[in-house]
Length: 141
Image (tube, rainbow, N blue to C red; front, side):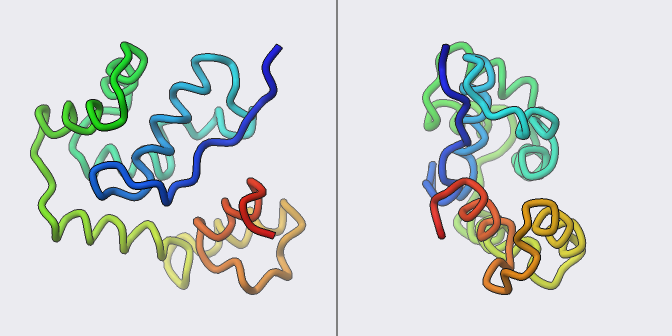
């Protein structure tokens, strides 16, 4: 029996995009029964859903491509073929959005709720979802 795992670091770039590789990693790990259970409810939702919406593709269609064996790069190229290729400014906009999500914006209450549930409410150095995930998943003390 395999050990349940967290997804990969969202900062690993695929085609210049932050988070895309984490989303595909979650798809693969979930299909193999390796994804930690607390990630199951948000598959295709939350940041997955936001990135799919930004790319103008459906999560389930992307999932089908990934589970058919597409690499991360192939899956991203498939997204572009279905919709449009992101230009450098659009990639910058996405990356800036995700690296600051939770920091004094509409999702701050959700981030604070997650921090409290994880007994991290006092951690003032956790200002974004990327910070929270890094601590919660053991990549950062």
